[in-house]
Image 1: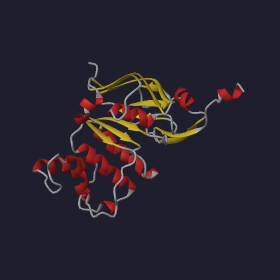
Image 2 (image 1 turned 90 degrees about the horizontal axis):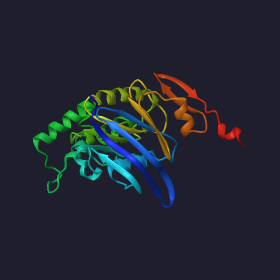
Image 3 (image 1 turned 45 degrees about the vertical axis):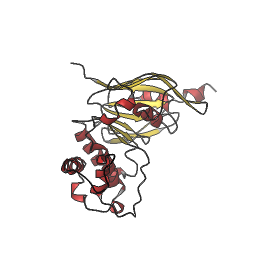
Image 4 (image 1 turned 60 degrees about the vertical axis):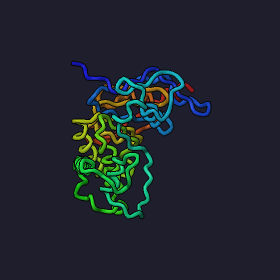
Length: 257
């Protein structure tokens, strides 16, 4: 039985200040997928994510989430943006930050129903951060902080989670554990994650989209030479099956000069 389509992007074009950012982008994401979007800086990765979330509108084409315009499906989505600002000197705990994801209009900062705290506990447990719930946010490592931000996105029980540069601030040694957590989370939540650094563990992800104005989708966790030739014009480093290696582009454009 074919999985339900969660994200449906069809022939999307987008320009910013007269500069073409995306051209004819088409992509479908089925329920249960773990899609990683890769590509060079400025290639359109974050733009694509924001179009999926309804934060940007396409110049042409359509974007549907659960068969609806993105803004109508927002309550079913979780989002961790690329740059989450938080004052690390402010005396706020890990639990407080996660509970921010349950704030409701008209309710005070200190008001949280019992179900809010239960949801926060479950979200922190999923990210293996419940034991740190009383720690001040400023005392956490970069990787721990990212886990807290993801827990804050999970506390509303989304069906799909969008992550923009979730690995930022996480050292190479910790990334394997971080991907293990995401893989476990993927059992119940569809994941779309943007990455720029190519540290992809293909044993964890299920599909890859390579984007550099145009979009190339590979319905597998493998990163192919064709994808690299499509998006990059220089050697790139990546991790496949846990083994670091380098993919070399053939530089056909240089041969033609």
